[in-house]
Image (cartoon, rainbow, N blue to C red; front, side, top):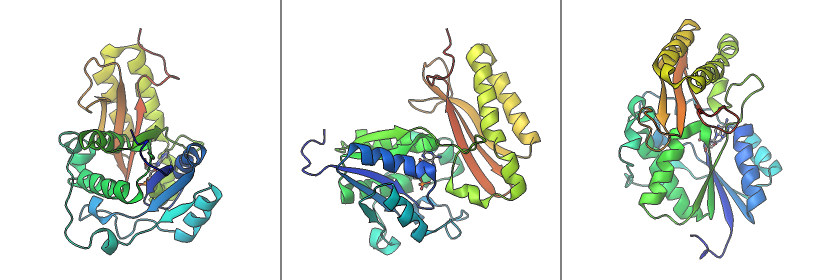
Length: 270
Ligand code: AMP
């Protein structure tokens, strides 16, 4: 759809504090495009009033070095005043934006959709890369691009994890040593629940309840743990494509993760 573009740019929007998850997106863009652009912008519009905007981890120098090593050509690092010189026109992706993360973080996805739309218009990429780690964000952006006839392709890449299964996240640096040792439990529990559900779909509710209890006992404050359809993020009924999604707090740190029910390495329901 974007063949009219004379240039060939792969684009990775980020908020910086890079880890291997970010780098995997940059490497994919590098493999597939002549130019690679990465934006680094801690977008105030997607943070709630009581969230971590002011203490969000920042390390620009290290980020530049890592991006350079990954073969990035251009870093786009705008200021908030440049992005929002006046109260911005915003984008609201109906319905999808209101569930799960949207319920816990009102306005969050309006901020995400708005900044991503602006970045797409500024950078004019052929392809933009996002991580499945933020599954709902991927679906919101996919819906926005489709609804607004945006002329680019989207690629979504698998979650990069630490050796113990914890999904890499810039926010993991908030965890105390003790919390860090408990954190891998999130992925372990998702895996266990998915295994149980995969072998017996009847047990969805029981398996999820058990998973929630396991996490609560380990010290997590679980905001949601649920199986949802990959198309609209409504609670799973009989769709073939589903994901188990979780948001939980360890102390003051909010972690999210997800696992697909029918990912190729998992046993399909016969
Ligand atoms: P962020 O800087 O947190 O806004 O993330 C920038 C991009 O990196 C988003 O598309 C994220 O989904 C993606 N990302 C974050 N963590 C991971 C991860 N562990 N694995 C793969 N992609 C990730």
